[in-house]
Image (cartoon, rainbow, N blue to C red; front, side, top):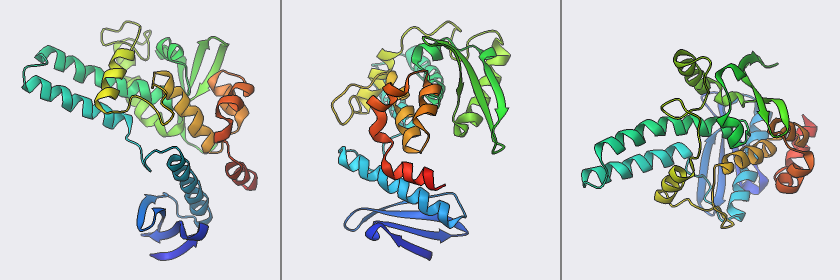
Length: 269
């Protein structure tokens, strides 16, 4: 390993390969996980590596595997399950086509909520005209949602990593109905409930509850956003404002995710 740095009592190794830094994280004696840090700067790599190590240790404390299955993978597994049912005559051809068509919608629905912190009802009411492109101070293309929710009207900023995928959905919806909803059922109508579909997919993937035995729901994607933004060092005030809630609520329910290590990193930037 080129230019290797051994940190955190050997639990974290930062090294360079083809000009890019990687992290090797020891999750148990003799067992390692490798991750690309996607940076050429050593200090940035060290900071990102320490953050990854902390997140993996948190997952281990909660009895979770080092890497969780993505929601997209859960949907893929569910489609394969229904395809097997179809082959055995347990699912009709029409139902299978409907499941495949709706699965595309699900990927976008989760993308929006998990990367913005919107409430499900706010996402359901979001119109195409409420989505506005902009460039941030780093020159990244992104989107701002004008949301009218339980706390009144506010701007919600999407995480920039999701912007390119939203480009495709926005172009499709603008072509279909520029005055319509961004997220709608296949016939263009407002989303009423999706919990039955979510329950079925999670049941097939054996992912119905979290490590505390709490049942997953649509709101879990909003919780995912809160936890991950805090772990990534975004301030409590900014998270609360984007989610349309109070600082007190964020501190009460998610404050433990904003760890001293994360704050120390942010203060040292």
